[in-house]
Image 1 (cartoon, rainbow, N blue to C red):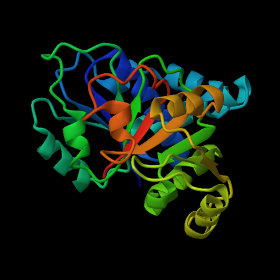
Image 2 (cartoon, rainbow, N blue to C red):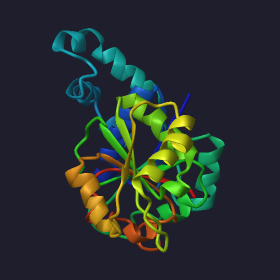
Image 3 (cartoon, rainbow, N blue to C red):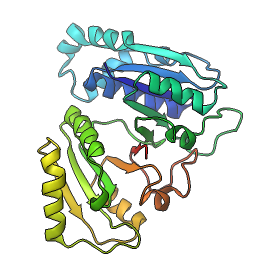
Length: 276
């Protein structure tokens, strides 16, 4: 069974990330592991009452009506609650946390990002350091993001270096929500643009033929400004999940050298960062 690990720093942002983990875990039939990285006031599973879980699932059409909620909602939320465990990572260095994460064959890590830089005493987790050591992607959730089903997922890459294992992961994830996936090609710095016919041939031969997903699309843009491209992906094309690779190609143009405790202001949807 898949394991989804949620980073808990006892913040409202962590609670928001935990709710997203519940939604994904229900779709993927996965277990949830809550990783407490600081002393908590209340255990995370106890913060989200069963009635709140039921309401969450009803809001996203997992249970179609009040009758179904009364008949089966409690059983569903009880099953979700039984699949949740907690682990104490308070004061533990990232390399040891990463060892435990890899040992558990974790499928996804979810981190709620702060609206502002937190007090250094509240948390000592360096997400960039953790990403350098784990084998699974980390989903970073903006503080004001409203919980919803994912409908459109975009992978920002230079198509010439597109990683098939990442597209396959995204395809498995997208199937949970019946979502579209698009690869937005932005040429890496110093490389020429790709002509449309050439890009479509590579996309068809190298990507589609190696990924079994029929809702996979290509967006070949000539935009060189990554920040403008991100705005287009989120605001104009209404993608609700953005995927990038740690330290590769456009990563530095979005984040700088590393991921801070907060997301850049232009990232308003969850960001899935894959290890390099």
